[in-house]
Image 1 (cartoon, protein in one colour):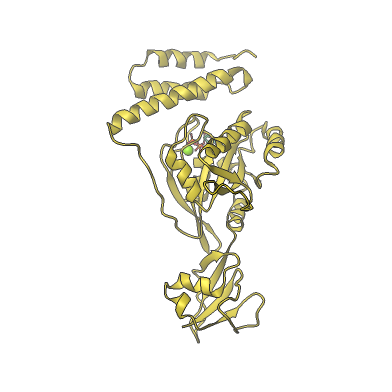
Image 2 (image 1 turned 30 degrees about the vertical axis):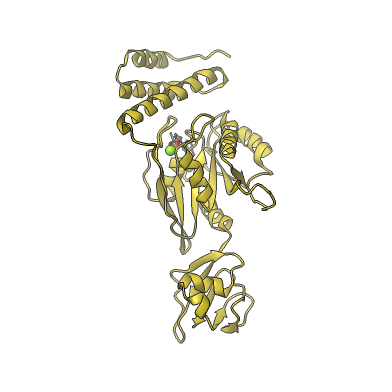
Length: 329
Ligand SMILES: Nc1nc2c(ncn2[C@@H]2O[C@H](COP(=O)(O)OP(=O)(O)OP(=O)(O)O)[C@@H](O)[C@H]2O)c(=O)[nH]1
Ligand SMILES: [Mg+2]
């Protein structure tokens, strides 16, 4: 298939070739990327552009950092759970973060925009869920800290680009690349693998850019490739399509419950629940309220699921979402 490059593209290419400074060369490449028609006939050029953009950026960063050791990041977990955003370049990870939270990472129509983590909190009913946007992952690029961040998160969103023929395969590459560093993305894992060095990262697949004219055909491929591996959510982050359903799923997928506390003789505090894993007992929940409480707990009363109002329960009583608990120590 011929590449059919436009005169504007060729002009940008000529400019790029003339540029001397790294920033100017990078600007030229960005322009070329935007002007390049994205189809099978330009796949090779797309790959070359991506590689050169990455090389120039890395060169610039190495110069800036001098001889300092490689950077590393650690984002303390906040709220009811932490998701990392994983995916190939340009899939729309940063746009999703801007849609769901107040964070303002750069969003741009060329690959390798995000260079460091960006954090935001999204509201779901009365809880907050933390989202961490990360740099893209390709066959050649992934830093060690990205993999460890994926391992330590509660779950991941694997973002896939439905506007790109290569989208499903680029997502597969992300999965493979993480696998090499022993982080396995799974929809729902049964802990039956023997290799304890493997870390399972529970993952939702978010297929983005559903507004693209070719999105439906690509979605069929996505369902074939990933349908039995991950729950799939279809969105158009740019237009805010599918955000409410995604927020609901973000909470559900964490498999946590909200528990409200009350003091004897007073109404419960229904504004800021404690969150704990599904299946938690009163004792486990008490430990979240205060370090000492798990030991000191004498009894508890519960309002909610499977009990009569204010029923006295034992420490091993299992709690449900939206239960109210009065702890007696
Ligand atoms: N048509 C369409 N474009 C989108 C959508 N979501 C994001 N984009 C565009 O896709 C481009 C890339 O978006 P980003 O959010 O920067 O992508 P990213 O995954 O963070 O990219 P990197 O930081 O390079 O990994 C931008 O031009 C966005 O405006 C969408 O739902 N539909
Ligand atoms: Mg980004």
